[in-house]
Image 1: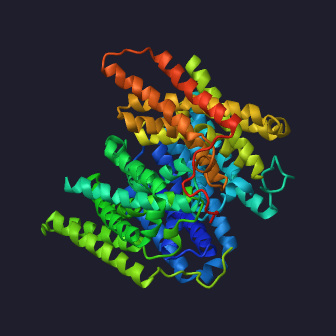
Image 2: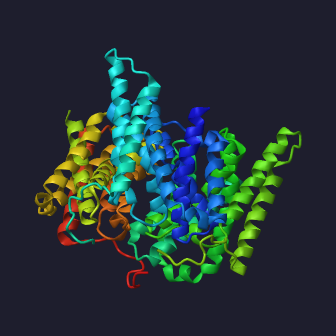
Image 3: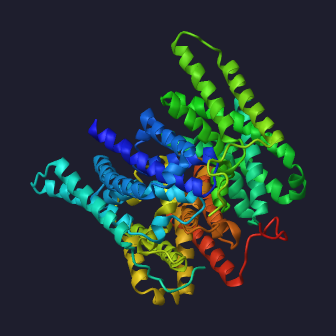
Length: 210
Length: 210
Length: 210
């Protein structure tokens, strides 16, 4: 119950950001629904296709499809309300990031992946939806350009992987505690990065765009 | 026989649109062949990867690969002929849309997906090739921006799903009749939308592009 | 040993081109690592997902993930060195192309695909990473626009397929010799194309861009 509710809340948050990007790009209602769905479910789809867990969970449970559809329709109908809530949506999005990096890593470990690939897939689960959203909207994915966004997700995923490895050494850490710590680190870091305007360094920083 | 012929005709129609977009974007011969193939086969590839039907049907039967290659080469050689046939190609494309939303839904149901996911995958089969084409050509997918294109495909898919559900209630509708009705609704709606210039509503309609 | 070393060298070469594109597009460190990884591993991921070999080989062996990460970090730290080595990187990239068209085709044949689909997947393995790189960087894939790049890869793949078919006719050609010939043809052709500035013909050549 709790897990599914959290999951649906994360999908809702991501679907909101997808729908808002669609509004800004002046897409039609169908484009808005596609962007809501792709952002909400895209990361999990990519993870499930890569680990061979097909059909993806989101296609086996209609609630996972319903959330982005309802979210998208709500944004289409009352978009002035949602565009004013940008700050709240940023916080929800950070929550989705923190949740999905943990659940994505757990699922990848359950499918037998090693620690580094599992952490990478956890991060892909968290940031993949946003990348698909931006590709469909015709812009270079925001996560590749600025914002400290993917690194907190990767660190959250690494905490889950680390605890999993410790288990082999006899340290049996309780799952909820590990998940809680990993989510808190990712969420707290991301919220701080949003508030302080932190961004990842750019190696070619001074060069002008091409 | 009939089914395969129809399928190859649908791939031919989609491959034509891909090749014409490649011409307009001034891609080279290889780019043209890739766009023809991606448009003709992309929707089915996405569907098959998501339901776990790998390798996709189009990789198991060489005729499926040959059709876009031959189509692409024909367009490369005689492109002035094809660019003049835009209206005919639009009608062929509408036929491909109607066909693939039905066959895609049927295949998803056969793989055990529920009604809503199956209809969604049917629609993805129908519009996915065009989305891949537009991403490769560096433009925001046309289907997300304007034109009443995806909604007829979704409605066609829902008709197939509805008939499938009615079967559980004891109403045994003959498959060819269901497919015929679903295709006719999708095709007729799409052709009307093309002729009348109908498009899906845009929620953020008045705002200028970003 | 030799095979893995060659494979990692090919991934290294592709990851270099991904990191350099990220620099030119002014992406941040995370974007640079994603582009390095996507270019180095993307072609193999697409091939493995399409033939149903999930999780992809690169997710089952941490060395495959480590190479693009280390390559990306090295480029981020010492990018002036790497940007000056453009010619060397072009040669390495041609080597990766020649290698992956052969190994990709061999893997597709081993998974039971027919000759034409196997050659196509070999080519996809070779050029797919570059296509994913360019999509993520927000540009029309270079391979679709200019340069004689994909055709040498396809011909290399066809040589592998041809030798495989000859085996059925009783001609038992030794694998290393076939791979060597296919790689040499692809590599030599690509290097010549780079030096002479050869490019594939454009059907719509004279029309201006849209």
